[in-house]
Structure formats: structure tokens, C-alpha cells
Amino acid sequence: MEKKEKKKITWKDFGVEKILLIAIAGIILLVTNVSERRTRTDTAEKKEVENAVAASENEAYITDLENKLVHILGNVDGVGQVEVMITLEASRESVLNKDDSEELEAESETSDGTKNERKNSRRENETVLADADGESAPYVVKELEPAVAGVVIACEGADSNTVKEAVTEAAQVLFGIPVNRIKVLKMEVHQ
Image (tube, rainbow, N blue to C red; front, side):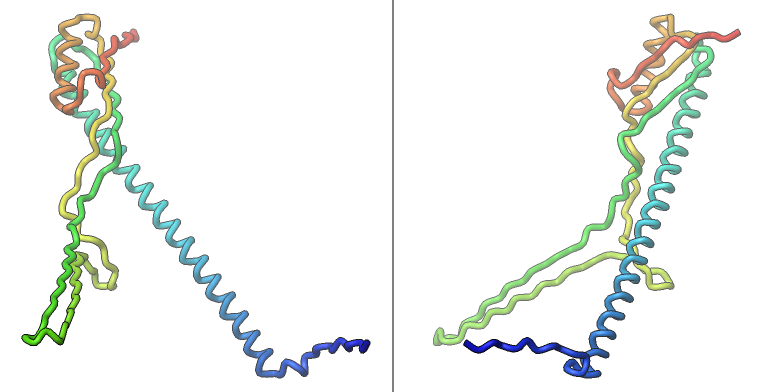
């Protein structure tokens, strides 16, 4: 039985060209990994900014609704001082223009029936807006304000059933929500 001799591989066996190719491939992998990480970080930062803007828009919308309701109810006889809290079901929703997609399929035959020809074509229309920098965004058809989920109203005159009923009906009419999502409470009077 012959023993096989183990051959040691040295740098000379690889050759300078192969070592350079491996080094270049390693550098390319490092550079692409860094750029991908940077892109992911930029995307995450953009989403955070968009979420913060959406939250501040919702807060402004809620505050506006609450102020209007306080103003209206404050002018109703017997209500007295009023405080309001409104909650929303979701945030503002953008309705985008829908893209069109069309597929056509045509088949033809010669008179002797020997030649079949099929043609398939697909056409897609995408509606986007592009700015001067070349950035594009989908075309927004309309913006839907968020729906009101519930309303809590605290007022001085809530001990009167007539006032309580009038306040509940006003909130129901203004926001189009059922009575079970409206709560009218007696406000504690501080003197």
C-alpha cells in the first residue's frame, strides 16, 4: 500500500491574477453591502418622517374638530362649559389613480389551415407625477379624512336629560356615528 503524500498549497500555486481577482471581489462585496445598508437606513428615516408628519396632521385635524364642537356646544342653551375628546379610526387616506392593464391575444390561420400564428401583447398604463429632479409619485385622485371613532363630551349641563340628548344628537349628526360611540358626562364645576 502506497501512502499518498499530501501536497501543500502555497500562494505561488494560486498565481497573482487569482489573488487579485479574489481581493477585488471582496472589495466589491464590501462596497455593495455598505451602500445597501445606507439605502435601508435612508428608507427607514423617510418612513419615520412620513409617520411623524401623518401623526401631526391627525393631531391638527382632531384639534380642529374638537374646537369646532366646543364652540358649537358652548352656544347651546343649558350646556355651559364644554370639553371634548375625539378619537379617529385611522389616519388620512389617499385614493390613487388606478393603473390600467390590458392583455390582447390574437390567433390567425391561413386558408389551407397549415399556418397558425399567435400574437400576445400586454399594455400597462401607470399614472405618476414626476418632478424636475426625476422623482416620481403616484397620482392622488382625492384625500379622505379619517373617520371619527368616538366622542366624549363633558359639559356642565349634562345632568339635564334634555341637554344630554341635544348634545348627543349634535355629535351624532356632525360626525355620522352611532349613539353608542358618543358619551356625554357631567363636568365637575371648579370654583
